[in-house]
Every structure is written in C-alpha cells, then in structure tokens.
Amino acid sequence: MKNKKFLIFLVSVCFLIFLGVVFLAKERPENIDTVPTENVEPDSLKTEWKTDNLRFVAHEDAPTDWKTDLYVGEEKQPRLSFNGYYLDSKFQNLDITGAKYLEVILLQGKLVNSNLFKDISGQLEKVLVFDSRGQKFLGIIASADPEYKDIDGDGIREMFVYHRHYPPAYKRAVEVYQFRNEAFWKWKEYEEDTQELFL
Image (cartoon, rainbow, N blue to C red; front, top):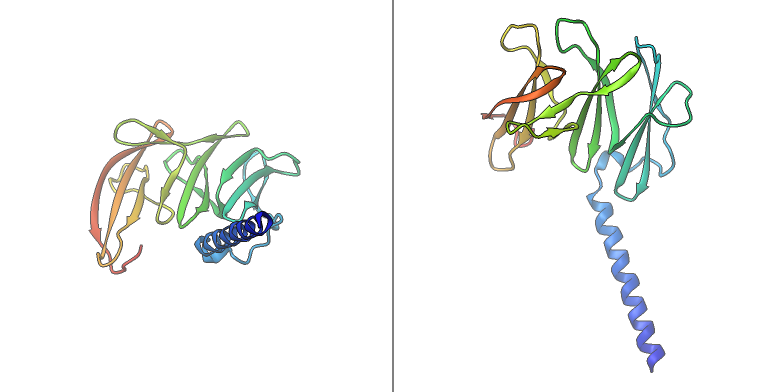
C-alpha cells in the first residue's frame, strides 16, 4: 500500500515538472525558439579599433536563460559576458569628437537591453546611464533599442528610450537622456501618441 502511494506521488511530481517546462517554453520569445542549445555560430564585427575583430557568441544556459559572450580576435576567454540573447551590434557617433561607441543589443525575455562601450587605449569602457536621482545603470532596458538624435543643435546626440503602453492605449512613454562626461543622464520624460498598440 505504501509503495502504491509513493508511486502515485512520484507520478504527480513528474507531471507537475512537465507542466512547468511546457509553461516556460511558451514564455520564450518566438524568434529564438529555433536556435540550438549549443553555441551558435558567432557574428563577427570588424572594427577600426586596435582590437580589429569582435565576436559575439550566444549560448543557452537553461530553457529560458540566454547569455552572450564577447570575444576579441581569436582569444579563448571572453572579455565580457551579458545576460540575454545577442540581437545586434553597431557603432554610434555621439558627439563631435569623432569617437566611436559600440552598442550591443540583447534580448531579455520580451524586452531589449542596450549597452554602450567606448574604446580607451584598446580597452572597452562601459558608458553608464544615470536616472534623475543619480542612480547608475549598466544599460537601458526598454521595449526596443534606443534612438540617438541631436535635438538641440549642440552636436551631441541625445538618447531616446521608449516604453510601450498596453492596449487599448495608443501611447508610449519616452525618456530622453543627455550625453555628458562620457555618460548618459536622464533629462526629461513625457508621453506621446503612437499609431500602433505596441511600440
């Protein structure tokens, strides 16, 4: 009798675990469902820096946990590791100095995490983000990757961060950051109308 109860208990636990795995799988972003669990082929980015080749390698640590490693050249050890699945990387010119900033864009769940780096004597240095209270962050997490545009004509591009509103509102929240002293500082925020329910 005891063996029978234990067997029923064991089957129930296995069934609950199965339901949990199915639920988590449904929560994964659709555009990464087809990526294999082993390391994917790296995307190479040719740069004008002393480090002339950067590689981004995404790998899955768990069914819903992705990480991305940044390698320089043929090095075996990554220089940086990010939480999230690698989406894109591109250079941004933020001011009139001509310095190039590397933006790394990652997918975290259904949100986008954007990170900026500047090359300092061959080393990648993080560009910090500060909110209106002076609290610092290592990146921007929002509904989409930010936009950079100079709105006051001073030759320095501001960063626009968008947060979507959910239906039925055709609106989105906008945060604007100014680039000062090699960091982004929150300047203002407002809401604006949008033609789409989602950003």
